[in-house]
Length: 124
Image (tube, one colour):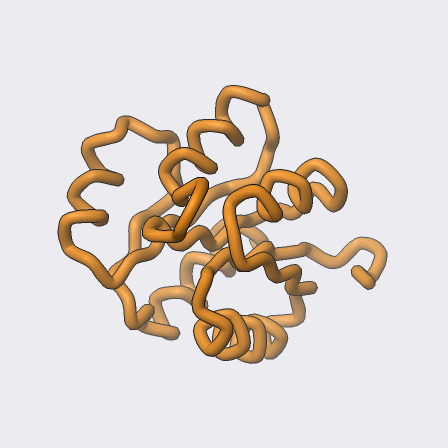
């Protein structure tokens, strides 16, 4: 459950270990963390909980992160988006997609950079 007046971050990654590590780190920044393991769950979660920021893995089975970002834009959903991937070709595809994302980060995500991005988007 999310606390009232606290910012929230949705982490979307098909790797359960990555989800756990990111959620543990983000909880130290005084934000609520939501977690989903696929793109379909991400869209449903965004519509239901309206997170302020979405950390979105690009390479996932089914609905990938780039398509989720497109759906977020098309449906005028409001979260800021940070795409992430451990695959260089996915990073290149994301940059070429023309999406309105805040950043595209290479995995493993440098936590210092993630903290800076979260603070810029949520805590200013």
